[in-house]
Image (cartoon, rainbow, N blue to C red; front, side, top):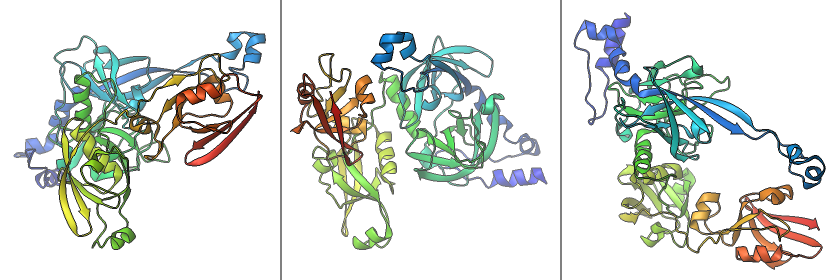
Length: 461
């Protein structure tokens, strides 16, 4: 009975027109199950062992100059702790490029990669992005390695069979099977990743992070990254980063980028609700509503305006800001994308330049020195690049704290605080912060904007 069911599943499997459908032609092939696919793909999935150095726990006496003076620097500096991180990775090229999750290797000081034939390689992160939870590694002295081919993840259909390969709980390379449960999942993944995911019910557990999600032809369709769980184990809801985004990371890594560069849209968008759709005269909710535009936005320069609805990017439907960002990220910086804009009942295709976030005006990043009351405080003028880096509102201008430093942190300042005024004087440039904190009066009053809320900090010197 099991053989008959297996035959029916495989015989009715429909993969995309870009991938050849394989149907078992004999009883011998049916009895093999997924063995030929696993045998072909598993050598390209590796185990990753990483060491991460973390500072000791916070203590109110640490970094306090008073206690440092009496007890020495050994008291003021907690001992670092070494954590071992376990995960998986996928070899993407024969010369040793490997993809894994950022939360596995992104902050590691030492990375060891072990292949299925028990060879070991030292590796370094050559490109990583915390937000996407992707890291590209380069293995040292590697050549002629087995690797997986990318499949166009836009051609995946819900219901397709899928295999997850990784090293769950460190037990060794393990294969689990399931189907593609959903596409275009956004805002549901755990950990650092935020974006657009493939959902699968193939069992994914701790240690599977960074492993491969493949189709029945052995092609890579995604990188396993997270699960929804209350117990810590698989509940049948796992998420994978689509292969198309991973391919763009690999392209940028090979081009020499040490950080991922995503096209800057310079817009804020929101999901289309039924109420908004009705107010715009739409039959049903679709697309992303443009709620804000930066003055330098390439979409604005192309003719889009607040209230417009973007329904497609390069012919692919988008229904959330994360999905829109994903489509543009896959296209990459330097080219163009065609956005389908809906304005009332008028629909138009508009070509938009894909650019990096502009550094206009110049950031003029400044670190306060020992002549100020808060040495080590790092501030920057706000521009689109800083807005993207710090997650600020598109309309924000002025000066932002990039790093609070030792004294600023103890005083209650945080990275991302926008400095509005110091001692009643408006702050427009990092120089204003330096001047206000050099030989100030006996008080220091700071007004900052934190998460959209005004906060006042008062100090006696």
